[in-house]
Length: 229
Ligand code: CA
Image (tube, rainbow, N blue to C red):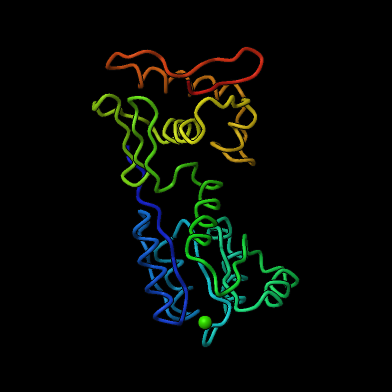
């Protein structure tokens, strides 16, 4: 049931920068595939079908812009989030103007922490919350790195949708989530499911979480939605 570790393709020709970034991404629980040129990057996109691409603008041979354009024009890769790195903010403006389809832009020199936050934000959009994070609420522990959940030490079996739902709840305990917002965040904006689907999966999540006893941690807020705790 565990979803695979998210894979990040890093396309950057400067080896030192690539190493630092790769090290930090791996420390966050990502599997990292490295490419030192645009051509290599494009090849690895097809081979690995990564969950996200961090793409440098200035590359020898095929430029980052061209790589991005190709990724975004292909049906099978166009939904992979691309974060472009560029040396100057004017370049970012230019990338935007060129409509390469990049999902986010980070200007060099960037802080690794900020870039990681952007990576997580993009993956949250496409894969659900809590990517690579370890979250806990009362006796429930969710490990976004190994995609496991335990309650009072017992392993809880969850399907991918229930896992994403729980991640979302555990990011903000006590917050009431309207069903529409849950649909956006867990199923994605373009999905064709209706709000009753949310109820079905919340039901499954509740059942799984109470399988070994313990009270139901999810609260139904009438007319509003659901909250954890
Ligand atoms: Ca470069």
